[in-house]
Image (spheres, rainbow, N blue to C red):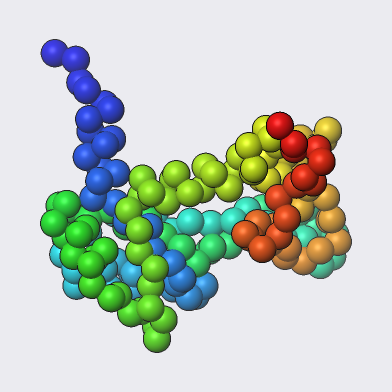
Length: 161
């Protein structure tokens, strides 16, 4: 009997919630314990930025992953996810913005596409195969610049239909 993976993924996405802002020093155990107050937690996925760490002394650089301050929380049931979405969640003196995972994915896809001109706002890999923020080996730890709505997306003349 074949498995309908699209139905399974849709069910998991329906009970998953995107939450932000979270403190950068939060741990997985702390977040799991906090979200357990709203119901059963299946999984907490802490989103991370890749960054380059260049140790002093000329040792080989390595990529570390810095916590982004956002997470995807998969609750046990749809009702528990609705409780998290409905109630004002306050963690570390900050009111969390909660939205369903499909809505978050839709908004992120709109930012990634830009204004519809076909150019992406997400940095591309360079000729050396590295992301642009990895180009500075002398930087200790450098996080990529985030794209915000206040920054112009592209030039109007080049994007005119």
